[in-house]
Length: 96
Image (cartoon, rainbow, N blue to C red; front, side):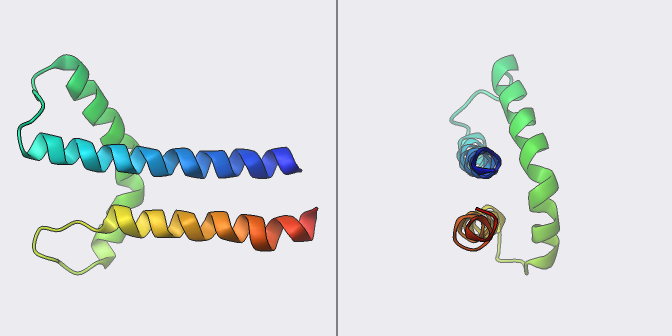
């Protein structure tokens, strides 16, 4: 049972890092730091968008417009932190 909880925790941790990478990539893209015409950069950007957008889109619909500031990744990271804490402090002790 511990292996299952560790795998779920690892997946949530990995998704947190993917969210951070997506935010950094979007900043680099917005400020023209990276070449958007590069095939590798485009592939990385599409991957990050396809992985994060299904989770971020519903939160963006709920959140009010903050004048161009997107805090949906922060909201998702807070949710992930809550889920990881819930997993280890409330659910795992009941199962183990």
